Image 1 (cartoon, rainbow, N blue to C red):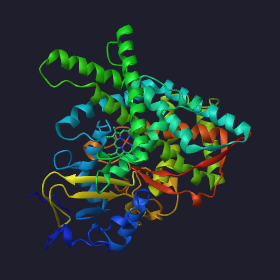
Image 2 (cartoon, helix red, strand yellow; image 1 turned 30 degrees about the vertical axis):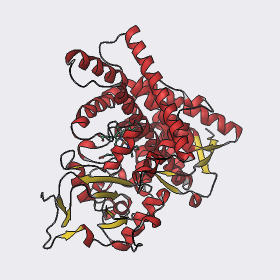
Image 3 (cartoon, rainbow, N blue to C red; image 1 turned 90 degrees about the horizontal axis):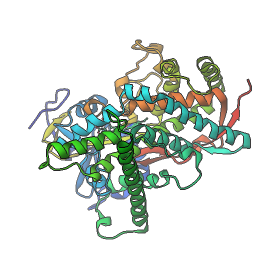
Image 4 (cartoon, rainbow, N blue to C red; image 1 turned 90 degrees about the vertical axis):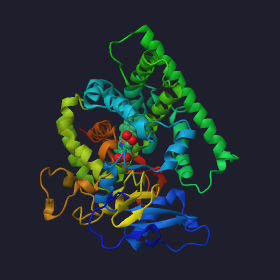
Length: 484
Ligand code: HEM
């Protein structure tokens, strides 16, 4: 047994010794769990029971952790000692989406190298003109809405933005969903993540035996999305044939080149299949869309509530952007730190990655608890981020706390960035982080440069929904063009 533990513990506890909310015989806590409110329920139990605790789905214990030092350690001890929770891979595999996010063991590293390259800083720098152009199209959409006095459902517009950006960068193809009203790919993508979540946490995989109407709809959406990706792969192959390049121009080309090279170099080896490439295309689309769009969306109620902050952001955007309506070049992005900070601070309070799941690949002892191989572990992110031990005045929305670089204790209180694990940590840390923060800077500086915003609904009525990521159920905003 390995001793992957922090702190000293005289007596070792077993999983069964951990506190557990009161449940029912046979089903345990199953009936108290509602998938859409999972993170809220786990947070409430964490408040009542401390950390770690467990809950029971039938006879299966699921352990819950909120201590970020322990979670950092787990995240860093991958892929050798911990993996993502096994059902993540099983469920994504049967949906044809088993790419980098869910890959484990030997399959993970080669995929990781390709994706890291495709999302690296030099790649994004070279891609900047397209990024700025897509941000300009988001601006045009918002200008139209402001002129017509329409309320904008921001979750929808921002997803169009992130899908266009991710597709153009990673697959060399811009679906221009920002200019279309219906028939866009994210109508189908939207069905997938909530189903992944429901299936990962299901007690029994009933859908393998019979399908409910929702499962049939999901199958249709999966078929549609797979067709979309296959067509994109066919077009990429044509482009590579008709306009050959010395080096791959994007992630999709890199994967197709690797497939060709492997087939030539190792004719006997297991080939990289189109299904594997398709799975990674889908992974990048799914991983890059909601996370970034919803992080930006969660920022808006905080801006709407603070006209002074909006005025300040507007002035700063005008100073940095000058006559341009979108940040003119990659180098200027570094002057937009505050526009990233307003979003990072929003996700400290509204974490889009609210629950992350792991399991040990061997028996381990963690925090004095003996965890047999395969024990299910959920990390719940928010408690540490709203703990006064880690962030001073933790319930207050204060983007400036992220701007005081090098100061350990702004306001004379703590600011422990290690407790902010919204992008994970260690070898599997989010490879899209740089792209995501560039999108935050671009979209929010463009927004504040041109518009003032107000919420079209009482923000207290916006619900947090667990859908694999944590999303707002709505984010309606009214935009007013600023007078210059
Ligand atoms: C605000 C936006 C985003 C957030 C909060 C976020 C969050 C995360 C988190 C928590 C993980 C798990 C990390 C870990 O296990 O240590 C992850 C992994 C991943 N993310 Fe992101 N992400 C964001 C944007 C993106 C974007 C824009 C892309 C790509 C276009 C992307 C692609 C991925 C991929 C492929 C993985 C799996 C990496 C691996 O397992 O090796 N993410 N992300």
